[in-house]
Length: 295
Image 1: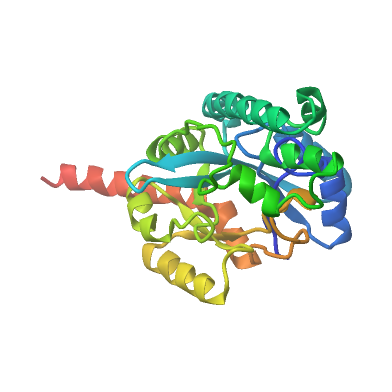
Image 2: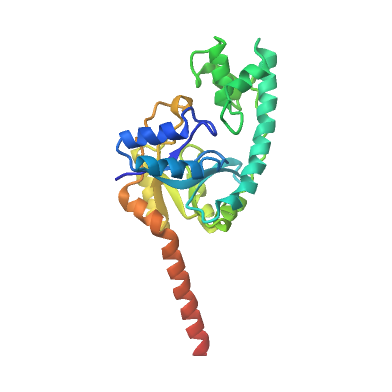
């Protein structure tokens, strides 16, 4: 079975709750998913417990926000199967605090520009660990100023090139820091949607920093991009993953759960990756020890 390894819930910027997502997966015949909320681990344990109830395997995951200061680009890293996910709490909390501060600034700017209150906007983020752009847009939809989340008004308010944007800066950790934190927690670091954030040219650099794999199958990757990323992963011996990046009604485009997924062959490689690395490390250590004895 294919596995959808990139899903967002109400805990971050998705519109659907954890249990409902698991039910959708079960009824869609998807037996393996990963809940990967932005810089938020709150749904990991709950997802696994609910998943067992419905016969759906929920892989521990989180999407870590980072920044490539050299290239001047945002970078998102998916962490999977962390042995000690609590060790990622610090980096997640740091980003969450920065995002919360930026969200409050944007909210106040919007409340000052439209006849709505901050409380009205905040009510649309109920259940989330933070305030996201989708919540602000949802409030503006309910107030009658737009009929969609991602449209002309969204770009006017949140596009960096827009002269009327209400954006506030958010400080993110470096790519090296994010990868190191993921590995420090015993997790696997996968570059999320490189086509979406224009990160393809930097993959070689990220591999040098310790990157374990790339999200190849994603709504923003067309057939040509999938072929390009597959070739890169084969050459660099990287893991290949895929997921729908499901956000429900808060998604930038209409996408169903499981529409983009990780083939079983590559899911098996992901699940066995850490054990394989440990075997390779033990073998290398034995060979090094034997070489020293023969000197």
